[in-house]
Length: 513
Image 1 (cartoon, rainbow, N blue to C red):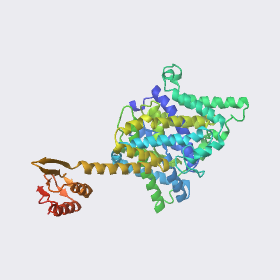
Image 2 (image 1 turned 120 degrees about the vertical axis):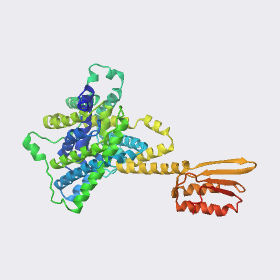
Image 3 (image 1 turned 180 degrees about the vertical axis):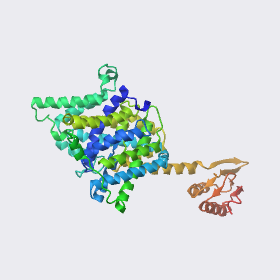
Image 4 (image 1 turned 135 degrees about the vertical axis):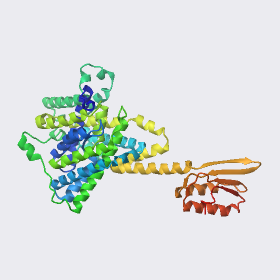
């Protein structure tokens, strides 16, 4: 099947997504205060099972930063991670039902400006959140995208506090990695027979490991990157240790109100994040394919049922990993599958090598991923489309920085709705004026449905009618008039005589009764 065909480009993309996903799977588990292995389980299960049934060819699923706050509060509410896992199973079943009921169509009503704003907002968050890791300040987990940090600081104040604990070795590796990653977009890398076969992110990871080994050999204490600034993974040496790290669900609270509330919340939030991510992935898909959202909800449901049964975090489609997949040249589902296989193999086979990778090298990869989501050209293109696109776009980005993805998107949608209402009101009336035989004439054609939203427009319009003029109000196509709007028309008719305005009503007699 073409959607699972493993090409050279998909191998490169799979390796890149693996390098992006590894710190995020571990970091999100750490941010959720759950076992680290729960993040790896989620990444592997989502990469294999969700991808298998997914309605998108480019989406990559896994544990999501946007669910961190929900997971934290849910585990605390239910009292144990085992009971929480049971809630994840039920949430997955709810998602399955939502998919079968074809509720995925809700994503079609999200404005493009908001989707673009969400992508750019994620890009900004990625860059800001990774700068501390780039310079060796790792107080907060990689996967923590919340505005208020576990250490008491926020996204922006963290940039000030990181200056107190800068690691020269981390900065050197981070800067070299950034320069290489950005320059690898040039012809010198893409046309080189050897280099072009190696994913640039993998190259900078290997380079980061080698540089830190050189720092150790040189004996320079200031350059050596300490273990707290390196990747940390759980050790799984055999099947017995694997079984010991699996956590199984406890359904003892299945019919309690708080259990059902947690399961319902997880299902709704995870489904919304998935639908938003799928819409965003479709926007950046070079082939402009349209994903099956209902099929995606079913796939996410299957993934969450499996995750809950073996102790994994809840999963969604994740825009960070998905955009890394697209930017690295992924064309089908094989890259997402490969990233999951690499996650599993590396944790089981080479944890010692993984633990030599500097966080700074991975931070550089994530910063470049973020930059590609927030390139200046995106702002330039959006600004050309006018205020109705610019303002929702900017509101989504700004609110996301100080809250989270869903609140940012919600505010962006709210602003878009205001513009839609305003445009519908102002453009729904045909109006004109002219002087005929020395007398000023006005013509106002009413739309099919005159609602209370039109009340303000009519009030302003009637105020502009000059004294001693002639007004024609044409209701030829009108079907309904809201009582509030009728009152505005009645009020003007009563005042018209005082202003010596002759009002001619066409096809409105029955509607105004």
